[in-house]
Image (cartoon, rainbow over all chains, first blue to last red; front, side):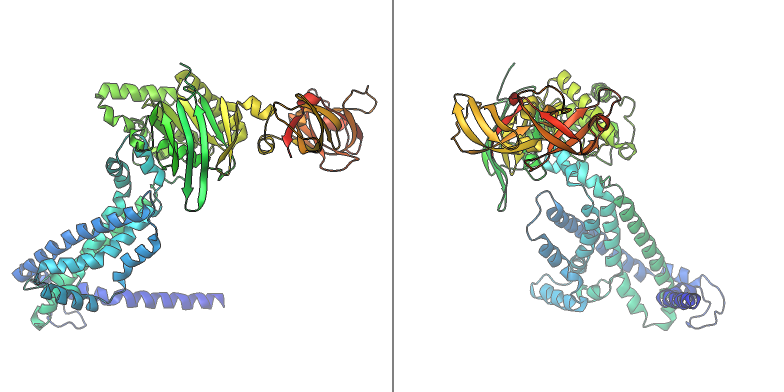
Length: 267
Length: 366
Protein backbone atom coordinates (compact mmCIF):
# COMPACT_ATOMS: atom_id res chain seq x y z
CA UNK A 1 0.00 0.00 0.00
CA UNK A 2 2.72 2.38 1.08
CA UNK A 3 4.95 1.42 -1.85
CA UNK A 4 2.07 1.87 -4.22
CA UNK A 5 1.26 5.26 -2.67
CA UNK A 6 4.90 6.27 -3.00
CA UNK A 7 4.96 5.31 -6.65
CA UNK A 8 1.84 7.36 -7.31
CA UNK A 9 3.39 10.33 -5.57
CA UNK A 10 6.60 9.93 -7.55
CA UNK A 11 4.65 9.86 -10.83
CA UNK A 12 2.72 12.93 -9.83
CA UNK A 13 5.90 14.79 -8.93
CA UNK A 14 7.53 13.84 -12.23
CA UNK A 15 4.52 14.97 -14.24
CA UNK A 16 4.30 18.18 -12.28
CA UNK A 17 7.97 19.03 -12.83
CA UNK A 18 7.60 18.17 -16.52
CA UNK A 19 4.60 20.48 -16.73
CA UNK A 20 6.65 23.23 -15.11
CA UNK A 21 9.87 22.95 -17.03
CA UNK A 22 9.41 21.05 -20.32
CA UNK A 23 7.81 23.95 -22.21
CA UNK A 24 10.61 26.19 -21.08
CA UNK A 25 13.22 23.64 -22.10
CA UNK A 26 11.77 23.53 -25.62
CA UNK A 27 13.21 26.99 -26.21
CA UNK A 28 16.87 26.14 -25.91
CA UNK A 29 16.35 22.83 -27.75
CA UNK A 30 14.76 24.40 -30.82
CA UNK A 31 17.18 27.28 -30.79
CA UNK A 32 19.81 24.75 -31.92
CA UNK A 33 17.53 23.00 -34.44
CA UNK A 34 18.62 23.21 -38.07
CA UNK A 35 15.19 24.22 -39.41
CA UNK A 36 13.04 27.34 -39.35
CA UNK A 37 10.03 25.24 -38.28
CA UNK A 38 9.54 24.49 -34.67
CA UNK A 39 8.67 20.83 -35.00
CA UNK A 40 10.02 17.47 -33.97
CA UNK A 41 12.08 15.57 -34.88
CA UNK A 42 15.19 17.70 -34.61
CA UNK A 43 16.69 18.02 -38.08
CA UNK A 44 20.24 18.73 -36.97
CA UNK A 45 22.26 21.02 -34.76
CA UNK A 46 23.28 24.54 -35.74
CA UNK A 47 24.51 27.74 -34.18
CA UNK A 48 23.06 29.74 -37.07
CA UNK A 49 20.15 31.13 -35.05
CA UNK A 50 22.37 32.22 -32.22
CA UNK A 51 24.69 34.12 -34.57
CA UNK A 52 21.69 35.58 -36.41
CA UNK A 53 20.26 36.68 -33.10
CA UNK A 54 23.53 38.29 -32.09
CA UNK A 55 23.67 40.20 -35.36
CA UNK A 56 20.25 41.87 -35.08
CA UNK A 57 20.73 45.57 -34.43
CA UNK A 58 17.08 45.99 -33.41
CA UNK A 59 17.72 43.46 -30.69
CA UNK A 60 20.75 45.40 -29.49
CA UNK A 61 18.72 48.59 -29.20
CA UNK A 62 15.97 46.73 -27.36
CA UNK A 63 18.48 45.16 -24.99
CA UNK A 64 20.01 48.55 -24.30
CA UNK A 65 16.54 50.00 -23.66
CA UNK A 66 15.72 47.18 -21.26
CA UNK A 67 18.92 47.80 -19.34
CA UNK A 68 18.29 51.55 -19.28
CA UNK A 69 14.94 50.77 -17.65
CA UNK A 70 15.81 47.80 -15.44
CA UNK A 71 18.97 49.13 -13.76
CA UNK A 72 17.44 52.40 -12.45
CA UNK A 73 14.23 50.51 -11.57
CA UNK A 74 16.24 48.05 -9.47
CA UNK A 75 17.94 50.87 -7.56
CA UNK A 76 14.77 52.95 -7.20
CA UNK A 77 12.53 50.14 -5.97
CA UNK A 78 15.22 48.75 -3.64
CA UNK A 79 15.83 52.22 -2.17
CA UNK A 80 12.09 52.74 -1.68
CA UNK A 81 11.78 49.28 -0.13
CA UNK A 82 14.74 49.95 2.15
CA UNK A 83 13.33 53.25 3.38
CA UNK A 84 9.95 51.61 3.99
CA UNK A 85 11.49 48.69 5.89
CA UNK A 86 13.59 51.06 7.99
CA UNK A 87 10.41 52.87 8.98
CA UNK A 88 8.57 49.62 9.68
CA UNK A 89 11.35 47.84 11.55
CA UNK A 90 13.26 50.80 12.94
CA UNK A 91 13.83 51.56 16.62
CA UNK A 92 10.58 53.44 16.89
CA UNK A 93 8.03 50.96 15.58
CA UNK A 94 5.57 52.75 13.36
CA UNK A 95 2.05 52.61 14.75
CA UNK A 96 -0.16 50.61 12.43
CA UNK A 97 2.85 48.93 10.80
CA UNK A 98 0.87 45.84 9.66
CA UNK A 99 -1.65 48.07 7.86
CA UNK A 100 1.15 50.06 6.20
CA UNK A 101 2.88 46.84 5.13
CA UNK A 102 -0.40 45.71 3.62
CA UNK A 103 -0.80 48.95 1.69
CA UNK A 104 2.78 48.77 0.44
CA UNK A 105 2.28 45.28 -0.93
CA UNK A 106 -1.14 45.92 -2.46
CA UNK A 107 0.28 46.63 -5.97
CA UNK A 108 1.07 42.91 -6.09
CA UNK A 109 -2.60 42.02 -6.37
CA UNK A 110 -3.69 44.84 -8.67
CA UNK A 111 -3.85 43.26 -12.16
CA UNK A 112 -1.05 44.67 -14.31
CA UNK A 113 -3.52 45.41 -17.08
CA UNK A 114 -5.53 47.68 -14.77
CA UNK A 115 -2.33 49.30 -13.53
CA UNK A 116 -1.17 49.69 -17.13
CA UNK A 117 -4.38 51.43 -18.23
CA UNK A 118 -4.39 53.67 -15.16
CA UNK A 119 -0.78 54.75 -15.69
CA UNK A 120 -1.37 55.18 -19.42
CA UNK A 121 -4.17 57.63 -18.69
CA UNK A 122 -2.11 59.35 -16.01
CA UNK A 123 0.94 59.89 -18.22
CA UNK A 124 -1.06 60.98 -21.23
CA UNK A 125 -3.36 63.36 -19.38
CA UNK A 126 -0.62 64.89 -17.26
CA UNK A 127 1.26 65.77 -20.43
CA UNK A 128 4.38 63.84 -19.37
CA UNK A 129 3.83 61.49 -22.29
CA UNK A 130 5.02 57.97 -22.88
CA UNK A 131 8.69 57.00 -22.96
CA UNK A 132 11.14 54.65 -21.29
CA UNK A 133 10.71 56.88 -18.24
CA UNK A 134 7.03 55.99 -17.94
CA UNK A 135 7.92 52.30 -18.33
CA UNK A 136 10.48 52.68 -15.53
CA UNK A 137 7.89 54.41 -13.37
CA UNK A 138 5.42 51.56 -13.85
CA UNK A 139 8.10 48.96 -13.18
CA UNK A 140 9.22 50.72 -10.00
CA UNK A 141 5.62 50.56 -8.84
CA UNK A 142 5.39 46.79 -9.28
CA UNK A 143 8.96 46.04 -8.14
CA UNK A 144 8.83 47.89 -4.81
CA UNK A 145 6.62 45.27 -3.07
CA UNK A 146 9.09 42.57 -4.09
CA UNK A 147 11.99 44.65 -2.76
CA UNK A 148 10.02 45.15 0.44
CA UNK A 149 9.47 41.39 0.87
CA UNK A 150 13.11 40.50 0.29
CA UNK A 151 14.35 43.22 2.65
CA UNK A 152 11.74 42.43 5.29
CA UNK A 153 12.97 38.87 5.63
CA UNK A 154 16.41 40.35 6.22
CA UNK A 155 15.33 42.96 8.74
CA UNK A 156 13.03 40.66 10.70
CA UNK A 157 16.01 38.76 12.06
CA UNK A 158 18.02 41.92 12.69
CA UNK A 159 18.76 42.55 16.36
CA UNK A 160 17.62 46.13 17.11
CA UNK A 161 20.26 46.50 19.81
CA UNK A 162 23.00 46.43 17.13
CA UNK A 163 21.96 49.86 15.85
CA UNK A 164 21.56 51.03 19.44
CA UNK A 165 25.06 49.82 20.26
CA UNK A 166 26.37 51.92 17.37
CA UNK A 167 24.59 55.00 18.74
CA UNK A 168 25.88 54.17 22.20
CA UNK A 169 29.42 54.04 20.81
CA UNK A 170 29.17 57.62 19.59
CA UNK A 171 27.77 57.39 16.08
CA UNK A 172 24.93 59.57 14.83
CA UNK A 173 21.82 57.69 13.61
CA UNK A 174 22.94 58.34 10.02
CA UNK A 175 26.44 56.91 10.57
CA UNK A 176 25.08 54.08 12.70
CA UNK A 177 23.01 53.06 9.69
CA UNK A 178 25.99 53.08 7.33
CA UNK A 179 28.47 51.46 9.71
CA UNK A 180 26.21 48.76 11.18
CA UNK A 181 22.73 48.31 9.73
CA UNK A 182 23.61 48.63 6.05
CA UNK A 183 26.59 46.24 6.00
CA UNK A 184 24.52 43.64 7.85
CA UNK A 185 21.54 43.91 5.50
CA UNK A 186 23.73 44.26 2.39
CA UNK A 187 23.11 40.69 1.18
CA UNK A 188 19.39 41.43 1.32
CA UNK A 189 19.91 44.67 -0.60
CA UNK A 190 21.89 42.81 -3.28
CA UNK A 191 19.21 40.13 -3.50
CA UNK A 192 16.56 42.82 -3.86
CA UNK A 193 18.54 44.61 -6.59
CA UNK A 194 18.92 41.41 -8.60
CA UNK A 195 15.32 40.34 -8.17
CA UNK A 196 13.80 43.71 -9.10
CA UNK A 197 16.20 43.98 -12.04
CA UNK A 198 14.97 40.61 -13.31
CA UNK A 199 11.31 41.50 -12.87
CA UNK A 200 11.70 44.77 -14.77
CA UNK A 201 13.87 43.17 -17.44
CA UNK A 202 11.25 40.47 -18.23
CA UNK A 203 8.12 42.55 -17.84
CA UNK A 204 5.92 42.85 -20.92
CA UNK A 205 2.46 44.16 -20.12
CA UNK A 206 3.27 47.48 -18.45
CA UNK A 207 6.05 48.10 -20.94
CA UNK A 208 3.57 47.48 -23.76
CA UNK A 209 1.17 50.09 -22.36
CA UNK A 210 3.64 52.68 -21.23
CA UNK A 211 6.39 52.84 -23.81
CA UNK A 212 6.60 55.46 -26.50
CA UNK A 213 8.58 54.58 -29.63
CA UNK A 214 11.30 52.59 -27.86
CA UNK A 215 10.80 48.90 -27.35
CA UNK A 216 12.24 46.87 -24.53
CA UNK A 217 13.51 43.35 -25.10
CA UNK A 218 10.19 41.55 -24.37
CA UNK A 219 8.38 43.98 -26.70
CA UNK A 220 10.99 43.38 -29.39
CA UNK A 221 10.60 39.61 -29.10
CA UNK A 222 6.84 39.95 -29.37
CA UNK A 223 7.18 42.08 -32.51
CA UNK A 224 9.51 39.49 -34.07
CA UNK A 225 6.93 36.72 -33.71
CA UNK A 226 5.09 38.12 -36.72
CA UNK A 227 7.91 36.93 -39.00
CA UNK A 228 8.08 33.10 -39.08
CA UNK A 229 11.61 33.18 -40.44
CA UNK A 230 12.82 35.07 -37.41
CA UNK A 231 11.31 32.66 -34.90
CA UNK A 232 14.41 30.49 -34.38
CA UNK A 233 16.52 33.57 -33.62
CA UNK A 234 13.87 34.65 -31.12
CA UNK A 235 14.15 31.22 -29.52
CA UNK A 236 17.90 31.71 -29.22
CA UNK A 237 17.35 35.11 -27.66
CA UNK A 238 14.74 33.65 -25.29
CA UNK A 239 17.17 30.93 -24.24
CA UNK A 240 19.85 33.50 -23.51
CA UNK A 241 17.43 35.55 -21.39
CA UNK A 242 16.26 32.40 -19.62
CA UNK A 243 19.79 31.46 -18.72
CA UNK A 244 20.68 34.94 -17.46
CA UNK A 245 17.46 35.22 -15.43
CA UNK A 246 17.96 31.83 -13.76
CA UNK A 247 21.52 32.74 -12.89
CA UNK A 248 20.52 36.07 -11.37
CA UNK A 249 17.63 34.66 -9.34
CA UNK A 250 19.80 31.84 -7.99
CA UNK A 251 22.49 34.32 -6.95
CA UNK A 252 19.85 36.57 -5.35
CA UNK A 253 18.32 33.74 -3.34
CA UNK A 254 21.77 32.55 -2.24
CA UNK A 255 22.62 36.05 -1.04
CA UNK A 256 19.34 36.36 0.81
CA UNK A 257 19.83 33.03 2.60
CA UNK A 258 23.49 33.47 3.39
CA UNK A 259 22.58 36.76 4.96
CA UNK A 260 19.98 35.21 7.23
CA UNK A 261 22.61 33.45 9.31
CA UNK A 262 24.52 36.57 10.30
CA UNK A 263 22.04 39.14 11.53
CA UNK A 264 23.51 39.19 15.00
CA UNK A 265 20.96 36.86 16.53
CA UNK A 266 22.94 34.23 18.32
CA UNK A 267 20.05 32.02 19.30
CA UNK B 1 36.00 62.95 45.21
CA UNK B 2 32.86 61.96 47.09
CA UNK B 3 30.09 63.26 44.91
CA UNK B 4 26.87 61.72 46.21
CA UNK B 5 24.73 62.95 43.32
CA UNK B 6 27.09 62.36 40.41
CA UNK B 7 24.07 60.84 38.71
CA UNK B 8 20.80 62.34 39.84
CA UNK B 9 17.52 60.84 38.71
CA UNK B 10 14.75 63.25 39.66
CA UNK B 11 11.12 62.05 39.71
CA UNK B 12 11.53 60.31 36.37
CA UNK B 13 8.48 58.60 34.89
CA UNK B 14 8.03 56.73 31.64
CA UNK B 15 4.70 55.62 30.21
CA UNK B 16 4.17 53.31 27.27
CA UNK B 17 0.58 54.04 26.31
CA UNK B 18 -1.41 53.47 29.48
CA UNK B 19 1.35 51.45 31.15
CA UNK B 20 3.53 53.31 33.61
CA UNK B 21 6.81 51.44 33.24
CA UNK B 22 8.75 53.80 35.51
CA UNK B 23 6.80 55.73 38.13
CA UNK B 24 8.40 58.88 39.56
CA UNK B 25 11.77 57.37 40.47
CA UNK B 26 14.23 59.55 42.37
CA UNK B 27 17.75 58.22 42.94
CA UNK B 28 21.20 59.61 43.54
CA UNK B 29 24.24 57.63 42.52
CA UNK B 30 27.73 58.58 43.66
CA UNK B 31 30.81 58.83 41.46
CA UNK B 32 32.65 55.52 41.35
CA UNK B 33 29.79 53.58 42.84
CA UNK B 34 28.70 50.12 41.73
CA UNK B 35 24.96 50.55 41.77
CA UNK B 36 22.46 47.72 41.33
CA UNK B 37 18.91 48.01 40.00
CA UNK B 38 17.21 44.84 41.18
CA UNK B 39 13.68 43.66 40.61
CA UNK B 40 11.43 41.08 39.00
CA UNK B 41 10.94 41.26 35.23
CA UNK B 42 8.65 44.08 34.20
CA UNK B 43 9.54 46.21 37.23
CA UNK B 44 10.92 49.03 35.06
CA UNK B 45 14.61 48.58 35.80
CA UNK B 46 15.62 48.07 32.17
CA UNK B 47 13.50 51.05 31.06
CA UNK B 48 15.25 53.19 33.66
CA UNK B 49 18.65 52.00 32.41
CA UNK B 50 17.65 52.68 28.80
CA UNK B 51 16.65 56.21 29.81
CA UNK B 52 20.14 56.68 31.26
CA UNK B 53 21.57 55.48 27.95
CA UNK B 54 19.25 57.77 25.98
CA UNK B 55 17.31 55.00 24.23
CA UNK B 56 14.05 55.99 25.88
CA UNK B 57 12.85 59.50 26.63
CA UNK B 58 11.37 60.15 30.04
CA UNK B 59 7.71 61.15 30.02
CA UNK B 60 8.47 63.47 32.89
CA UNK B 61 11.35 64.20 35.27
CA UNK B 62 15.03 64.77 34.53
CA UNK B 63 18.27 62.84 34.69
CA UNK B 64 21.52 64.66 35.47
CA UNK B 65 24.91 63.08 34.84
CA UNK B 66 27.85 64.99 36.26
CA UNK B 67 25.66 68.07 36.61
CA UNK B 68 24.42 68.01 33.02
CA UNK B 69 20.73 67.55 32.21
CA UNK B 70 20.33 64.60 29.86
CA UNK B 71 16.81 64.91 28.46
CA UNK B 72 17.92 66.65 25.25
CA UNK B 73 21.18 64.76 24.83
CA UNK B 74 21.00 61.96 22.20
CA UNK B 75 22.65 58.59 23.00
CA UNK B 76 25.75 59.26 20.90
CA UNK B 77 26.60 62.41 22.89
CA UNK B 78 26.14 60.96 26.38
CA UNK B 79 29.17 60.23 28.57
CA UNK B 80 27.82 56.73 29.16
CA UNK B 81 28.27 53.38 27.48
CA UNK B 82 26.20 50.29 27.67
CA UNK B 83 26.74 46.55 27.73
CA UNK B 84 23.60 45.17 26.11
CA UNK B 85 21.78 42.14 27.38
CA UNK B 86 22.61 40.08 24.29
CA UNK B 87 25.95 41.93 23.96
CA UNK B 88 25.11 43.28 20.47
CA UNK B 89 28.51 42.31 19.06
CA UNK B 90 28.64 43.56 15.44
CA UNK B 91 28.50 40.35 13.40
CA UNK B 92 30.21 41.83 10.35
CA UNK B 93 33.30 43.00 12.27
CA UNK B 94 36.06 41.08 14.02
CA UNK B 95 36.99 41.53 17.66
CA UNK B 96 39.49 44.31 16.99
CA UNK B 97 37.05 46.23 14.79
CA UNK B 98 34.28 45.78 17.34
CA UNK B 99 36.39 47.28 20.12
CA UNK B 100 37.76 50.04 17.90
CA UNK B 101 34.24 50.93 16.69
CA UNK B 102 33.67 53.66 19.25
CA UNK B 103 37.12 55.23 18.80
CA UNK B 104 36.52 56.51 15.25
CA UNK B 105 35.59 60.00 16.47
CA UNK B 106 38.85 60.30 18.42
CA UNK B 107 40.79 60.18 15.11
CA UNK B 108 43.69 58.24 16.60
CA UNK B 109 46.62 57.32 14.40
CA UNK B 110 47.10 53.63 13.68
CA UNK B 111 49.68 52.79 16.39
CA UNK B 112 47.72 54.65 19.05
CA UNK B 113 44.47 52.93 18.02
CA UNK B 114 46.16 49.55 18.13
CA UNK B 115 47.62 50.36 21.54
CA UNK B 116 44.23 51.33 22.96
CA UNK B 117 42.49 48.24 21.58
CA UNK B 118 45.29 45.93 22.73
CA UNK B 119 45.09 47.50 26.16
CA UNK B 120 41.35 46.80 26.24
CA UNK B 121 41.92 43.22 25.05
CA UNK B 122 44.48 42.71 27.79
CA UNK B 123 42.05 44.11 30.36
CA UNK B 124 39.47 41.47 29.49
CA UNK B 125 42.21 38.84 29.15
CA UNK B 126 41.54 38.20 25.46
CA UNK B 127 44.95 39.34 24.22
CA UNK B 128 45.64 37.98 20.73
CA UNK B 129 41.92 37.55 19.95
CA UNK B 130 41.75 40.72 17.82
CA UNK B 131 41.41 38.94 14.48
CA UNK B 132 38.74 36.50 15.65
CA UNK B 133 35.40 36.81 13.86
CA UNK B 134 32.41 37.67 16.00
CA UNK B 135 30.75 34.30 15.45
CA UNK B 136 33.83 32.43 16.67
CA UNK B 137 33.41 33.74 20.21
CA UNK B 138 31.82 31.88 23.11
CA UNK B 139 29.15 33.50 25.26
CA UNK B 140 31.63 34.55 27.93
CA UNK B 141 34.00 35.97 25.33
CA UNK B 142 31.21 37.94 23.67
CA UNK B 143 30.32 39.37 27.06
CA UNK B 144 33.90 40.48 27.62
CA UNK B 145 34.25 41.97 24.13
CA UNK B 146 31.06 43.98 24.75
CA UNK B 147 32.61 45.16 28.01
CA UNK B 148 35.89 46.15 26.36
CA UNK B 149 34.07 47.88 23.49
CA UNK B 150 32.22 50.06 25.99
CA UNK B 151 35.12 50.70 28.38
CA UNK B 152 37.66 51.56 25.67
CA UNK B 153 35.75 54.83 25.24
CA UNK B 154 36.52 55.70 28.88
CA UNK B 155 32.91 56.58 29.76
CA UNK B 156 31.93 58.31 32.98
CA UNK B 157 29.24 55.70 33.52
CA UNK B 158 28.95 52.10 32.36
CA UNK B 159 25.45 50.67 32.07
CA UNK B 160 25.09 46.90 32.28
CA UNK B 161 21.79 45.29 31.25
CA UNK B 162 21.62 41.77 32.73
CA UNK B 163 25.23 41.30 31.60
CA UNK B 164 25.64 37.79 32.96
CA UNK B 165 22.18 36.44 32.24
CA UNK B 166 23.27 34.41 29.20
CA UNK B 167 26.19 32.70 30.94
CA UNK B 168 26.18 29.41 32.83
CA UNK B 169 26.33 29.42 36.62
CA UNK B 170 30.07 28.82 37.14
CA UNK B 171 31.12 31.42 34.57
CA UNK B 172 28.56 33.86 35.96
CA UNK B 173 29.98 33.62 39.46
CA UNK B 174 33.48 34.06 38.09
CA UNK B 175 32.45 37.10 36.04
CA UNK B 176 30.71 38.68 39.03
CA UNK B 177 34.01 38.89 40.86
CA UNK B 178 35.89 39.92 37.73
CA UNK B 179 33.44 42.74 37.00
CA UNK B 180 33.61 43.90 40.60
CA UNK B 181 37.43 43.97 40.52
CA UNK B 182 37.43 45.77 37.18
CA UNK B 183 35.05 48.42 38.48
CA UNK B 184 37.18 48.99 41.58
CA UNK B 185 40.39 49.35 39.61
CA UNK B 186 38.88 51.67 36.98
CA UNK B 187 36.86 53.76 39.40
CA UNK B 188 34.10 54.20 36.79
CA UNK B 189 30.50 54.32 37.97
CA UNK B 190 28.76 51.06 37.05
CA UNK B 191 24.99 50.71 36.98
CA UNK B 192 23.84 47.11 36.87
CA UNK B 193 20.36 45.89 36.01
CA UNK B 194 19.57 42.39 37.17
CA UNK B 195 16.72 40.20 38.36
CA UNK B 196 19.22 37.94 40.10
CA UNK B 197 19.44 38.98 43.76
CA UNK B 198 22.67 37.08 44.34
CA UNK B 199 24.30 38.94 41.47
CA UNK B 200 23.11 42.27 42.86
CA UNK B 201 24.25 41.45 46.40
CA UNK B 202 27.68 40.22 45.27
CA UNK B 203 28.57 43.16 43.06
CA UNK B 204 26.76 46.27 44.21
CA UNK B 205 27.79 48.94 46.70
CA UNK B 206 24.17 49.93 46.86
CA UNK B 207 21.00 48.45 45.45
CA UNK B 208 17.63 49.90 44.55
CA UNK B 209 14.92 47.24 44.65
CA UNK B 210 12.19 48.04 42.13
CA UNK B 211 8.66 46.78 41.62
CA UNK B 212 5.85 48.11 39.43
CA UNK B 213 8.00 50.99 38.21
CA UNK B 214 8.83 52.28 41.67
CA UNK B 215 11.86 52.06 43.92
CA UNK B 216 10.63 50.08 46.90
CA UNK B 217 13.79 50.27 48.96
CA UNK B 218 17.36 51.43 48.51
CA UNK B 219 20.48 50.64 50.48
CA UNK B 220 23.70 48.65 50.78
CA UNK B 221 23.34 44.87 50.28
CA UNK B 222 23.94 44.13 53.97
CA UNK B 223 21.18 46.47 55.03
CA UNK B 224 18.68 45.20 52.47
CA UNK B 225 19.37 41.61 53.41
CA UNK B 226 19.62 41.92 57.18
CA UNK B 227 17.35 44.89 57.86
CA UNK B 228 14.72 45.13 55.12
CA UNK B 229 12.17 47.87 55.76
CA UNK B 230 9.44 46.55 53.51
CA UNK B 231 7.70 43.23 53.21
CA UNK B 232 8.37 43.19 49.47
CA UNK B 233 12.14 43.40 49.88
CA UNK B 234 12.13 40.99 52.82
CA UNK B 235 10.30 38.50 50.62
CA UNK B 236 12.14 39.19 47.35
CA UNK B 237 15.71 38.88 48.62
CA UNK B 238 16.63 35.49 49.99
CA UNK B 239 14.50 33.14 52.06
CA UNK B 240 12.44 34.62 54.88
CA UNK B 241 10.07 33.47 57.60
CA UNK B 242 7.10 35.76 58.21
CA UNK B 243 5.10 35.77 61.41
CA UNK B 244 1.84 37.71 61.59
CA UNK B 245 1.22 39.55 64.85
CA UNK B 246 -0.17 42.58 66.66
CA UNK B 247 1.49 45.46 68.48
CA UNK B 248 1.03 45.31 72.23
CA UNK B 249 2.94 48.35 73.48
CA UNK B 250 5.51 50.83 72.23
CA UNK B 251 7.89 52.45 74.69
CA UNK B 252 10.26 54.74 72.80
CA UNK B 253 12.05 52.48 70.32
CA UNK B 254 11.13 49.30 72.15
CA UNK B 255 8.06 47.48 70.92
CA UNK B 256 6.36 44.41 72.29
CA UNK B 257 4.70 42.31 69.60
CA UNK B 258 2.56 39.25 70.08
CA UNK B 259 3.09 36.99 67.07
CA UNK B 260 2.07 33.41 66.41
CA UNK B 261 3.80 31.02 67.06
CA UNK B 262 6.67 33.00 68.58
CA UNK B 263 4.70 34.46 71.45
CA UNK B 264 5.56 37.82 72.95
CA UNK B 265 8.78 39.32 71.55
CA UNK B 266 10.60 42.62 71.86
CA UNK B 267 11.77 44.41 68.70
CA UNK B 268 13.12 47.80 67.60
CA UNK B 269 10.80 50.38 66.05
CA UNK B 270 13.70 51.98 64.14
CA UNK B 271 12.07 55.39 64.35
CA UNK B 272 8.58 54.30 63.37
CA UNK B 273 5.36 54.83 65.37
CA UNK B 274 2.85 52.05 65.83
CA UNK B 275 -0.57 51.90 67.42
CA UNK B 276 -1.42 49.29 69.99
CA UNK B 277 -3.37 46.48 68.31
CA UNK B 278 -2.00 47.31 64.85
CA UNK B 279 -1.40 44.30 62.60
CA UNK B 280 2.28 43.80 61.76
CA UNK B 281 4.60 41.11 60.44
CA UNK B 282 7.87 39.87 61.86
CA UNK B 283 10.54 38.62 59.48
CA UNK B 284 13.27 36.21 60.49
CA UNK B 285 15.98 34.77 58.23
CA UNK B 286 16.20 30.95 58.23
CA UNK B 287 19.87 31.12 59.24
CA UNK B 288 18.80 33.03 62.38
CA UNK B 289 16.55 30.17 63.44
CA UNK B 290 18.46 27.82 65.74
CA UNK B 291 17.53 24.20 66.27
CA UNK B 292 18.40 22.18 69.36
CA UNK B 293 17.39 18.77 70.69
CA UNK B 294 14.54 18.96 73.20
CA UNK B 295 16.69 18.10 76.21
CA UNK B 296 19.12 21.03 75.90
CA UNK B 297 19.02 23.89 78.43
CA UNK B 298 16.18 26.28 77.67
CA UNK B 299 16.86 29.88 76.64
CA UNK B 300 14.42 32.74 76.88
CA UNK B 301 13.15 32.61 73.32
CA UNK B 302 12.20 29.12 72.23
CA UNK B 303 9.22 27.16 71.02
CA UNK B 304 8.77 23.47 70.28
CA UNK B 305 8.07 22.12 66.83
CA UNK B 306 8.18 18.96 64.75
CA UNK B 307 10.53 18.45 61.81
CA UNK B 308 8.35 18.18 58.72
CA UNK B 309 10.75 18.13 55.78
CA UNK B 310 14.48 18.30 55.08
CA UNK B 311 15.87 19.70 51.83
CA UNK B 312 19.55 18.87 51.35
CA UNK B 313 21.43 21.59 49.41
CA UNK B 314 25.00 20.39 49.88
CA UNK B 315 26.56 23.17 51.89
CA UNK B 316 23.41 23.55 53.98
CA UNK B 317 20.13 21.84 54.68
CA UNK B 318 16.73 23.53 54.76
CA UNK B 319 14.64 22.30 57.65
CA UNK B 320 10.85 22.82 57.68
CA UNK B 321 9.34 22.79 61.16
CA UNK B 322 5.64 22.73 61.95
CA UNK B 323 4.44 24.07 65.28
CA UNK B 324 1.33 23.09 67.18
CA UNK B 325 -0.12 26.57 66.52
CA UNK B 326 -0.20 25.65 62.82
CA UNK B 327 0.32 28.22 60.08
CA UNK B 328 3.18 28.20 57.61
CA UNK B 329 6.10 25.96 58.57
CA UNK B 330 9.13 27.70 60.03
CA UNK B 331 12.20 27.32 57.82
CA UNK B 332 15.67 26.99 59.32
CA UNK B 333 18.99 26.49 57.55
CA UNK B 334 21.67 24.31 59.01
CA UNK B 335 25.14 24.88 57.67
CA UNK B 336 27.14 21.73 57.02
CA UNK B 337 29.97 21.77 59.52
CA UNK B 338 31.22 18.23 59.72
CA UNK B 339 30.14 14.97 58.25
CA UNK B 340 27.18 14.71 60.59
CA UNK B 341 24.19 15.54 58.44
CA UNK B 342 21.08 17.33 59.61
CA UNK B 343 19.12 14.18 58.86
CA UNK B 344 20.89 12.21 61.60
CA UNK B 345 20.73 15.01 64.19
CA UNK B 346 17.14 15.89 63.38
CA UNK B 347 15.30 13.05 61.67
CA UNK B 348 11.93 13.84 60.08
CA UNK B 349 8.96 13.71 62.45
CA UNK B 350 11.17 14.27 65.49
CA UNK B 351 10.48 17.12 67.91
CA UNK B 352 12.94 19.99 68.14
CA UNK B 353 13.45 23.17 70.11
CA UNK B 354 13.35 26.29 67.88
CA UNK B 355 15.08 29.36 69.25
CA UNK B 356 16.02 32.82 68.00
CA UNK B 357 17.23 36.18 69.19
CA UNK B 358 14.72 39.00 69.20
CA UNK B 359 17.35 41.34 67.74
CA UNK B 360 17.24 39.31 64.51
CA UNK B 361 13.52 39.92 64.09
CA UNK B 362 12.50 42.63 61.62
CA UNK B 363 9.31 44.51 62.26
CA UNK B 364 7.38 45.16 59.04
CA UNK B 365 3.95 46.41 58.11
CA UNK B 366 1.56 43.50 57.66
